Image (cartoon, rainbow, N blue to C red; front, side, top):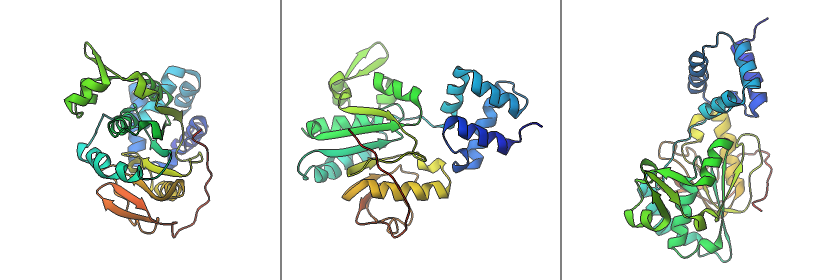
Length: 272
């Protein structure tokens, strides 16, 4: 008997280690079927076999499931807020500060944080972890090569200071690259780091179901220290933030004030 679509999603969830049922179905279904049509696949049995036996197409499939669009200082006003207010406040804490860029895509986001910290003369005090579910895009991030459209939002002086341009490619500073540690991580399945001062997760949770968002918000709260910040994307405000133990201090910025009023089990894993 041929696989049904729901059975196919269940098998692919096992294969990828990602529960596809926790993504909004309309968006997920469109991405899955667009590749099926593009590859000329007629049924789900054939589709599953291709994903199991063709590494190139499997990587293409995983990449299609995730949205890997990012650029340096995307939404510049938010990064100005980080630069002028949020990070200086965090840096008043003694010792090392701990930052997590979750769903970091091509690395532009954590590298933007590294630039700001360098300009604040505080990069040596920071531990920056950057994670994504897509190993291919993580390799791009580690390489640190970008086209102009990915660095266009940076002020020109910062672009000249922290990039080496060769033709149409901008190569990020090797020194600053060393300040960011990249790691593959599944937000829905794996434990989160602990005692964080800042979590940046932008334009990621918008693609998840309400059930998945609920778990992520609880885990983000538990991963932050009291007074730590969670930075969201502009199109995904944290509704009911007080129930999750946050205060809304500026557009896209939520400060942890206490524990969530809701309960959930969560694990931890180390930045080291």
